[in-house]
Length: 193
Image (cartoon, rainbow, N blue to C red; front, side):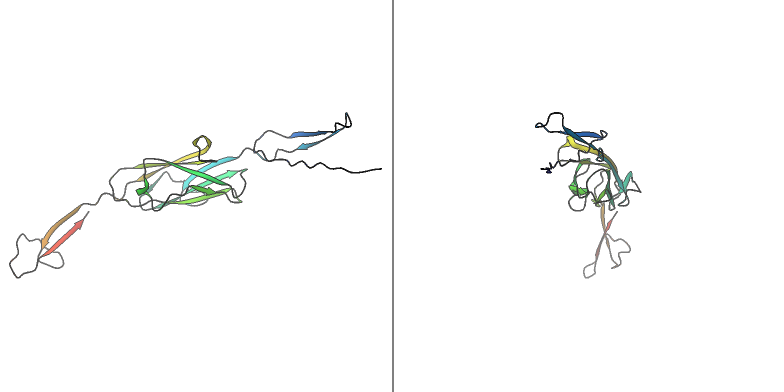
């Protein structure tokens, strides 16, 4: 009598550009009997682009930013599954005082192939010159898996404050005095640069 048997074969997305492949299934009980199917190469090698810029789409890239501003680290991918979390690694001349809050450690890729995080740069009020921040995108926390890297310069616009003081006989701080009579009022005026 006639019958039907099925074998389930799940085809894995291997994310390698290799061209179409052929899967052949041989039946050992029936020598010379086999069937084949073409596996289309639809999961290409993923691509990654990192833009440090003024917007979330990555269409306005920046090479530098002033302290007290924010920028976006936008990862633009192809052939990366939606909701994939990629790791962000930070190197360069910066430290935790250069940023407001904790720097994000991951970015999640959306259905459009794009993921982004905001990077807020703080006014640290230290004179330190231009600092470079380098951000790398990795598929793991291992630096061997870095897919793309980009750098941005942070301009030192918040210098170390310089304070000076003087005495005045006016509550508005106008004028400078070097002595005051008993019973009079003196005002300490503090200025910053």
